[in-house]
Amino acid sequence: MNLTHFFEHWAITENPFKGEEARDDAVFARLGLHGIADQSPARPTATHSDFEKVLGSLERPSTAVVFGEKGSGKTAIRMQLADHIRRHNLDHPDRAVWIIAYDDLNAILDCLHDHGGKANPADSLRTIRLVDHIDAMLGRATTTIVTQLLDRPLADSPCPVPADARRRLRRAGQQSVRDLRILQAVYDDAEQAPRRARALRRRFGVWPSGKSLLWRGLAWAGWLLPAGAAYWAYFQVPDDAERLRTALQIVGAILAAAWLLVAGKQFLLERWRIARLGRRLFKQVRTGRRSEHSFAGAAAGLDRDDQTPLILPLTDSDENRYAMLDRLRRVLAALGYRGVFVLMDRVDEPTLVNGDPERMRSIVWPMFNNKFLQQEGFAIKMLLPIELRYALFKESSAFFQEARLDKQNLIERLSWTGSMLYDLCDARLKACRAADAPPMTLMDLFAEDVAGRDVVDALDQMHQPRDAFKLLYRCLSEHCSNVTADQGEWRVPRLVLEQVRKQEAERVQQLYRGIRPA
Image (cartoon, rainbow, N blue to C red):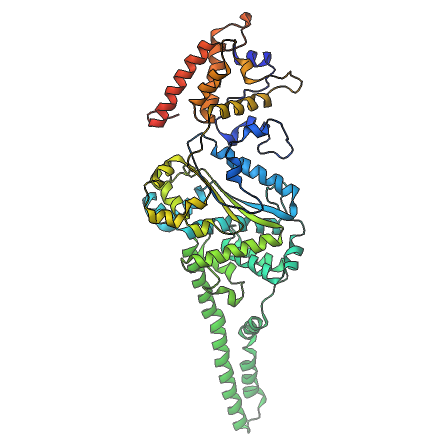
């Protein structure tokens, strides 16, 4: 017998237990955990018991720090959080929550490594600052907002910009437009950031100040005055009016000198100042792939008062970054978003990390700052590998005092009991059955000599969903390989369950000891 015959007998349309990664798991999608329309009764049993604590209140966003083993469901929780927020945004468009996906750190870490100029990636990662994380989050949010404003709103996006976004921002006041332009100049990670800055100015009808236009006009047309004085001195003044000619020559020379000073200021000094501004931004904002010229071109369109260190992140001070976060919140508030959720996951997967606990520590530790984690309306959901939990317990009391993890909804270990795993597997089984199939439970797949407690105890030894799925998958495979289709034995006997349980429990223990790959 093969699994296909087995599943056909039970009216199971898809193997419920073959998925090992939530992002690629079709059964996970069928459960409706990252869909909008699904309201399956199995949905409540497919979430971890700590999910509500991780989610918190969408009206009052709060930080959560979760540690979990590989395969314990961290990525599934992240997708469930995003799904829950999507549903909330559809039901409450006036109180929506913006999502910043912070789960693919490859591009950010590559940029930091390139900026650092160090040969060893570990040395580059040790230079990561809190402000680098803030810059990266601002970059992802700003780029998404500007792209939707200039191109078109993305209806299928978890955070679409309203169709009347321009009217909303204008109605919110010039401060909101100014905030958006400052954010775009610094954090828009698109290739054509200067061009997008000009397009944004045209979209909102922002023009240079009268003082700026006057200086530009004098620089470009100021030569007409000394040229006119020279023309009159040499071609219009009679030969006998020597004193008048001399006076005009002196006036022309003074005007020429003044124009040269104005032109020098506008064409040389001003360009040097803007180029220097671009270099300073390039040095500080290390998480995007923009050149000094790109920063300079985008920042040149800002008002002179907005090009100062008080506004732009020209130093490594975190106060400028918190001010930038405030600007982002004001812009989002004008667009109908009342909070921000940062979903951080897969810290161990970037190429420069490769699961190294010390490198993960270099990335995450700067974020353990109470001021950063406790911002109003700004929630950081950190789904971290269990290796960082072990490193965390080795830190000093001063570190804990700064991080104040007692206020961050800390979950020290994302654990699953056998009963929780049973409910999860049962929900997956029901999600894979034909619509007209009669009701059944997970226990129906096992023979009469298998008690419910036996299955729960076997699942309890797996500790996490990924290994629980492997256990059940192997039980079905082993049973099918030992019987023929003609025998008609459609239930897994106790002997097969015990054999597979013993082998899988040994595999899990070897995995935890680091002597087995998976």
